[in-house]
Length: 59
Image (tube, rainbow, N blue to C red; front, side, top):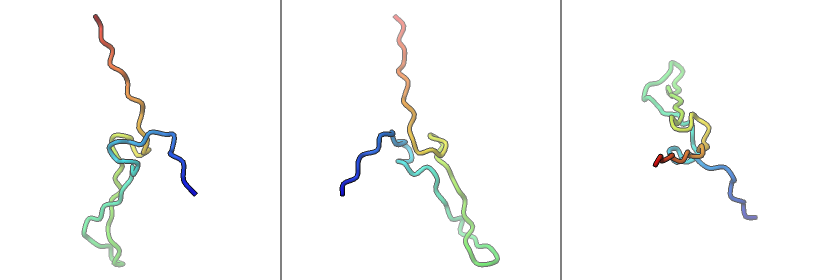
């Protein structure tokens, strides 16, 4: 069954993936990796784009 296109605009910087986990390369005492959660600075972690404002031109 086909899926419908979403109605909200996706952030152009993160392409809808606003939060990522980055491995630092080091490990905890139990052997798991240390990770950092980083959010998209453009959409502040929402994944949606805000409508752009039109620039007003005065004549």
